[in-house]
Every structure is written in C-alpha cells, then in structure tokens.
Image 1 (cartoon, helix red, strand yellow):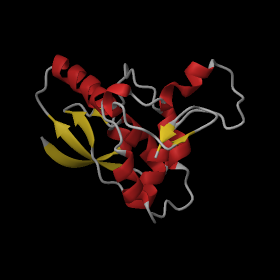
Image 2: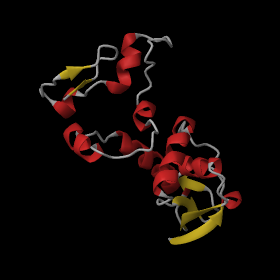
Image 3: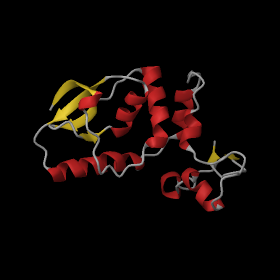
Length: 163
C-alpha cells in the first residue's frame, strides 16, 4: 500500500458499486468543507475505487481536481469485493451512545448545516407516503442494543425515544 495523490479524472468508480450513496454526497462535501479532506480514497493498482465512492463524489461536487488515495496493489478480486462489502456493512452495525453524543455535540458549531436531518428520512409535515412503520424504521431503538433502558422523551411523529 502507498499513499498517492491522484487526479480525480484518473480514479475509476467501481461499476458494480451496490451502495446507493447519492443522498450522502452533500453531507460528506460539507464535512470536507468544514473539516478538510482527511480520509483517503482506497483504490486498487488500476485506480478503481475499493472504498470511498461517496468521498469521490463529494470531492467532484466541491470542484476539487485531486485526492489522496491509498493504492492497494495485489489484492484478489474476491478480496476487493469482500472489502467493498464489509467496509460499508460493518458501519451499519455501529450504534450511537446518545449520552456521549450529547456531550460531544454540546456547543459544536456545525455552521448551520443540518447533519441531523440527513440521517433521518422522515418528512416533518407527515407527507411522503409509506406506512408509519416504514417511516419510523430508521429511527427505532434496537432493544438488543438498549435493553430495558427508560427514555424521557418520545417524538410524537416518528416514535424515536431519547433522553
């Protein structure tokens, strides 16, 4: 592996990327704008993206011409496919510790960007169709993660419970 600066025009998105990431591009672009570009895009020896499709799209949207890339040489096609899947899937397994998150966010200036609204895909006006279960699906608390913890508040629209 080696860290290398590549022109975005030299980077090739993986043609069978199953991840639908367009909804996250603006948030990633805003994160890069506010905090700078930190995490390299991971590519193979042919500059095909292994991980970092959303960062690639965000950098394009910001009008950047280059990106730091971690070039991984010698991976088998199976290893590349596994990494593409596992890099995305393992992130889905994580959950927020809401108490620690509250402490981390206290006083943080997000410069007016609504990073929270992008994470919950529920229309505030109740429009948009779908069953109540479908609308609340992305905000339900997983009983396995939180057990019998009691919550002080519950959103009347989506049922999200929190302290």
